[in-house]
Image (cartoon, rainbow, N blue to C red; front, side, top):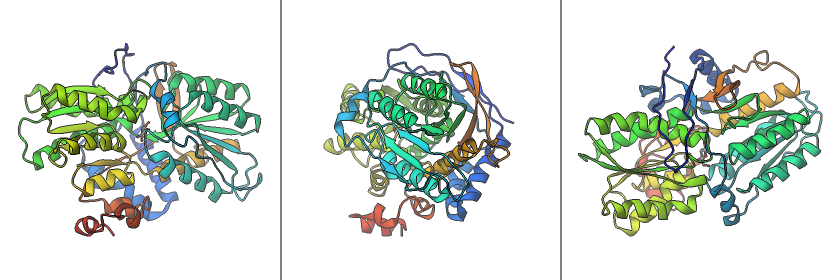
Length: 435
Ligand code: BGC
């Protein structure tokens, strides 16, 4: 078993960071977990989760789960509530008693609709479908970036008698408070995608988020080399490291690749900015400031997700630099994939949310039935929460790199159709073999 201590990179947000601690995940358990979920969803989805980049990366066999405490308060998440239709509410019409022999309802709360297209594009429909397919009633809602709304939704779900609450929190403090309410009501909680450090959920379903960052860093280096850029200057655009442990892990994974190269004089990280609270409205001004401070010189941008990347690309376009600068991303949304096909973004990370939704739904159903997840065939591994000084049971899936060479993998996995990706850029799709 390989264990690795992540590089201790404090969030560049002026706040004190809690030292990172190592949490060890059983590799065989993780592989088995991924296999289990893959088995459950057919060969197409399996193709999407086991291919080249992740498997070829040096990190692929060294899955570790490491986490840090993040900041205590939510800022940008709250303010983003106003900027979009803040609710994607969906309920499967399943009956209380179902084909799965399950009596009991599940509540799912997603954080916002603006920090990533994933929540409306992938999570809400896929979680709804997973429960519907299992014949289990589910109420899937989105808090629209408001912690107050998140709490209200949770209260109403608890009042409606949900048996399990699946939570993708806005920040760990408000998340942990909701978890405490649920616990008091005897409701089991699954942390979904984002962990609430210091909370009380027993279960956690996500991707290997340190690996996500590592893949971003590694692919950025490859893209720079392919573009024959020597002595590259890099601007880092982190996501909400102040509110989301995933963002801390993305950064830590990327730094584990970039920092040693900087130390060897092979590249220069000229600045490191944080889009606080994952508030994507702040991404363009934050990037403009960093770019201006470096005299408009940049070769690569480590953008934490596709939505931040898209804001960065907007600024680069205005300066006539788009296409010349290597930009990373994450989430494999339509906009990110189109930016890749148009030559403005060099990679994204595909996290097959279908697998994540299915793992969460299977786990929820086992919990409703009172089954031990292991007995129900769900392989969980240990995940340490240093803030809460406790160990959670986790299922962590494997992310995959997407570049212009394998956009088709996203279609093959069934996440998006070629028509969705190619609308308006059909010729680019044909050239890249997307069909
Ligand atoms: C998720 C990413 C997402 C980001 C912003 C993270 O916790 O893992 O997929 O892009 O939040 O919503």
